[in-house]
Length: 159
Image (cartoon, rainbow, N blue to C red; front, top):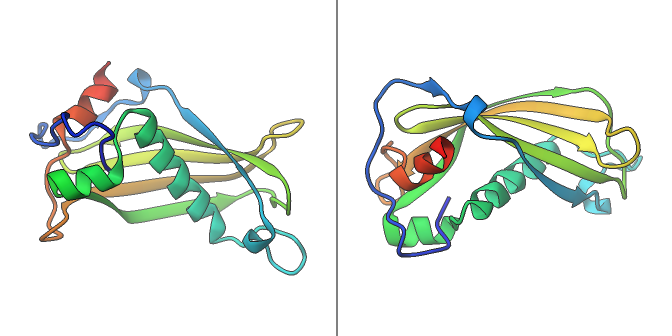
């Protein structure tokens, strides 16, 4: 994940203990349309594509906070990688559906974030289609070793 503004610095860290920050940070929502390429022959979204929708929503969430992933990577040597993901499928999404994908930070640790995400049909009823919990690690983009989350990103949660 990266920053939109190079003036922001992606240095520093927090205490090693994980803490719950969900009560301080409201969920972000991003809409996406289901294209034919996202579906199987019957027009149903292929299961792995829910992970793609969630990844894009996390990127847009980060962008909404003022951070661009390419800037973080090139100017601050920081990247985020998925280290664990669990999904629960409830109902299928279909070709041409408009979906709403939410992003909510549940916990942060010294070098990781845990997200709760939901994919809903954005149409009538807002049916819940898929839920997921995704853990991402902050790594040094040169060494691929864990490194503390940037203070600037953590400040967004505290506000």
